[in-house]
Image (tube, rainbow over all chains, first blue to last red):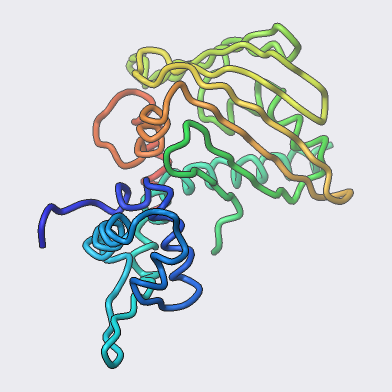
Length: 107
Length: 155
């Protein structure tokens, strides 16, 4: 593996996000992915390489063709990154709800 | 238990959206954002000032038992429409996060349920991402201590 890129860099690029949405629907060959974009095959191939390095895409050979699959488990890492922040707010709002329920019954 | 609070923070944007449905009538949800004694309980901070009106301002302060300031924040209210909307700024004092613009929208769902839609805009993408990572960071500053406390309770 060459330069190690992190998953956030991988999804920071709009073309790469578009590639992910395409492949999430169905596994595709590099040619089929490139056909969906105006960019050169070379450019798309570079994007695919980065997504594969970050394990957001997985290669699978089928006959003579290589298919790229979406790796949802890797995508979960992004959600987990936000989790502590989301939990902090969820906790705060749960507290708000409890306080106001008591407030209501006091009246 | 599944979280009822949804956070939408798109990559590369300097904003985020927090939504939450409450098992509370709209009026009570709104009241919780207006009454100083309730805000104190929810935020776990002392409310020095909270003028819930257009052009009003507010100040929060948390100190530990020794009187050291753990958290201090302030802001001004730009729009105040009862049971509907609050637009305000929020700034954590002595913290490198700049000023954020917060737009709270309150919505009635049924007689006994309501929804809060919170749109927060930061000064830059980098600042937003720093705030998002806050609960992860160690020993960062006063506000962090409070966040950590909440975090520890969840473990």
